[in-house]
Length: 317
Image 1 (cartoon, rainbow, N blue to C red):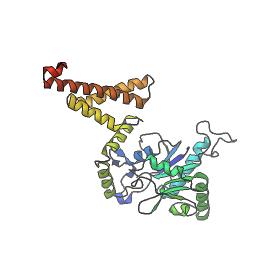
Image 2 (cartoon, rainbow, N blue to C red):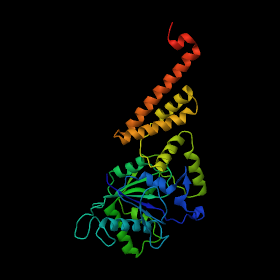
Image 3 (cartoon, rainbow, N blue to C red):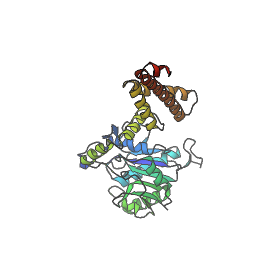
Image 4 (cartoon, one colour):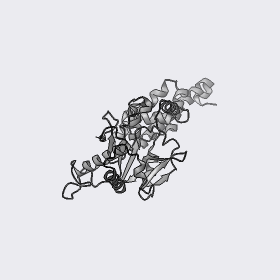
């Protein structure tokens, strides 16, 4: 499903003493990059806030006036998105002047994902649940406490633009207006079937400490680390954690402890060569793991036979 994304990253972070909230690290990665990873398959992503390095390319916009609040920021993101899709800032949404679609992006997407930049546990499954919801004007996440989250939502683009335009005409400006002024006029479906922590945001230093601690919990630390490492290395590959850990165990026990990390490195190198030759990446990893694990098990069996004595080692009776 084609969609565009707007990430709001320009708040004052008053409860964090004015710290650069989107740049704060959780699990070694900036909060903004974590959110961008959740919407990585968006056709176009606009970040409303101050420019900064990001893990993947985005387009930048700024609300007017700076610090004008989330509704003004959302309007700035929509305007920038429409101008980009038109091919120039004053064009028509969805095509070049004259009605021809932009050759790079095509017509404007029917849905716009709207996210705040401080959601460390937002994931792609939650994003997909929002986009797939059959709501009339869109869908927004309802957290475990029963609160609706308009900054974790997928909106139908045209109703959203319409309501913002009506508010701008009524009030003369959008700065300082709350988001509920827009959402109150929209038919939005609440989505509850999502990760329990998807709406957790880092508004305070205590929130940040809690997020950092949860990232390192025993049940999730490996998944979080692998996701962070793949992003850092520019790898988009499903990792069979159990297979790799089993291989590392067999190499460590059957050969020597240092063999575990060295063997997994060699498996990665072999899989990369196979992929370069045209193999499916996941199948290449699985095949390399199988071969290395079989070798480690044969190595261990040979050592056990030697320890048992000459008859076992030669296989004679």
